[in-house]
Picture 1 (tube, rainbow over the protein chains, first blue to last red):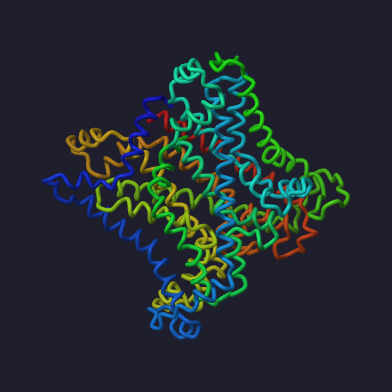
Picture 2 (cartoon, each protein chain N blue to C red):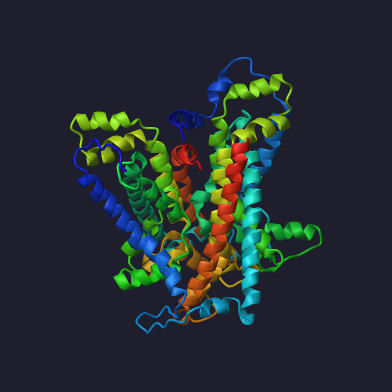
Length: 299
Length: 303
């Protein structure tokens, strides 16, 4: 991966952010082509596949239980918002969402920092056997499924059923982090290290304050990929956190589903309660999220 | 040999690097290597009971007549799942990325919508699709009824796996689209202009310009997808539970073996046997991803 490639990518990432509105403002737009018509139709189908389930979910949440059984598929007539109150009362979702936010934020931050600390000296060749360490990063990607040993480890460390234990396990799966960071660091000229060092900047200050501002896109990607993994985890949480008070939202909602099977109005309301803050946060963050992921993932 | 180090003494670098390495070794590498060791024992999930060395017994059990049918089924399910997810997810994602790149209005919105399931999380996704495919009263059942058919959907042993594959693709598509889109936008615009002047059709531009120049993104996406789908079980778990034979995947079998799932009581489940399944899965994932990586790299070089 060369520096030029990286710069070009960085530029393209920035341009992904805008909607193409500048292009549309140009006068004398070319006529719509056949390709564009096909694109519109195709995208319309995709949008239906993604938006219909959400609309249907809202529709179901607005039905009381009797209405659901008499009219399961049609549009709601009662607009019964009682489901939300009941779901909120019985579900304890605020606590679950907070747990999830805590796990995701801490574990993703920790694993991003560890990835950075490992990747930088290896990428620069400041360590002996850098190639060997790089090999270890690749090996980390292909580790076997270690549910039972991680469980035994936490048990023996006294960290079983603790939030700390769960966070440490989640953070230790670094994934592609060290690889993509060390790839990206190569686009930062080495002379910068030397110049900073000449100015009396120490290694840690460079690593933790100067460098991050230069490699923001790849740090964002690492963080987001990791956050997605933690946010979506349900299996490790089931294993490591039997105490329901520590459940992340995935597990909390899953347990709720187990308790209120086939009370679809209530289940839909609960799902919406969980999903709404996420969707709102996502609307504000999607630029960074989506732009960031595309920015640095590369083989 | 190491390169010139501009920051004076290397002690600070060594400190942070070692902390990182120790962290990864303790929580990721040691457990992973111990899986191999545990696979030769009869360790159970109850702590502090004696653990016996039983050699290859767990592997023998995996291939024993009593378990083989079930395990072959889980293996086949895993391969079908991974193959279907990889092909369809990447194929559809590529088409969406190309369509979004064709200067249509509102593409940031479309991209955001496709990426959204990633943010919603598996349980929300599981609930939404259980609702849609609710056999007694879901919209999918109404559509089936139009054709005079009915189906148990996730309860139907022939339909369950295809539906789980569908939901998996639905949830994973966004990430693939975003990676492809970033790759496509790095392709210089003038290449398309030149191709158009030469009279290339849209299809030819896709086949002769976009796909070859997108080779690195394709490699990244396909590999991420194969490794991910060979080991993923979260969607199958939330949609059909841990012990449904029709959607039993190897990684889900590891989970239900380790912690009992619904079959055995959790405390007596043999984690040694689960470790053996995990090692078998590890070898399969390793072989397949290496083969695919070598193939894709060669293909990249040819283009």
